[in-house]
Amino acid sequence: MTTDGKQRSDPSPDGLAGAVRTHRERRERWRKEGEPSMIRFAGQIGVLGWIIVAPILLGLFIGRRLDQYLGTSIFWSAPLLMLGVGVGCWSAWRWMHQQ
Image 1: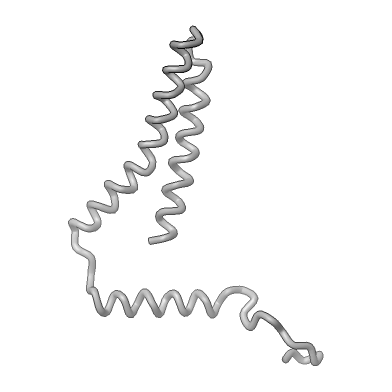
Image 2: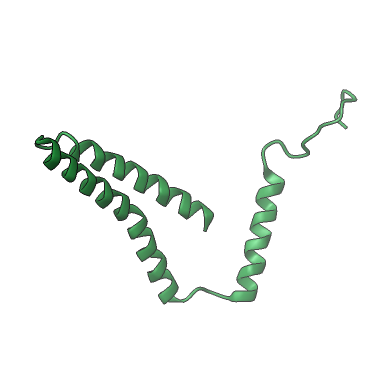
């Protein structure tokens, strides 16, 4: 209950309890598993690179095919390349925050 007599539905409006819980779970997992190896770090960097590069290459490939088919110079390649960059960066950001 608060000072004005109303009950609060969320005991931590800023998410502090959830952050503490997540930190504790990560610490316990670290105690059980230990430090990750250099191979694992290298693998994570490789996965992160492909998460970014794959949508870029896919957008460029589709854009080039559309340009060849429609006879335009880079009308589709440039926007689809930028779309691939955006999707790749967004995917990498999501992947990093899930790890």
